[in-house]
Length: 202
Image (cartoon, rainbow, N blue to C red):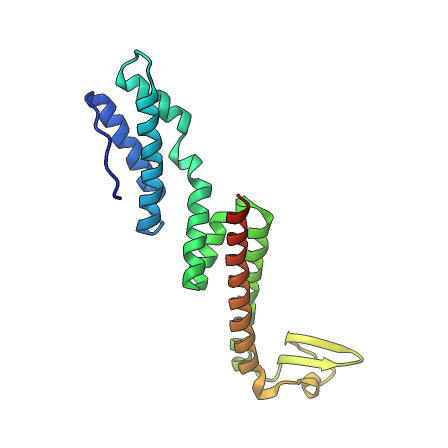
């Protein structure tokens, strides 16, 4: 099915309706076309049914205004839905930038989204370490000694040579790449699983 505008005999009602539909389209424009269409059709169907069930003797403009007032402002009541839909779309692509942007939209929708956002940011720390190792190979790595040192990252000391405790050497960059990829996939799958669980619990 495709979206079909509701016909109004009153030109003012038609203008109010079209303006409301345009606001919905603007609010959902960041979503994929199928999700935009789904939301638009759902709201449009609600408007149509409410209008048909309104047996009051008021004119079309008043009926429509009352219906739209009950539904609410699209920019407000669609905000959370759009954010969730955007997150669903982004996790399917496994695009880290899109996922981060979608998580930012969802930061106000629960602590779990804040946690996932932090986890994704930590992945960029791994990427930073890879480049840091290239430019400063002596002081960046995995430094470990059972008695006094456990560092994954950059270390600097003018009094002691910690380079002898570096455990990975030339394998540091490959290991960090593998860890980054594996961590990214696991976090993304957990995020998708969370969305699936939320849908089943509704």
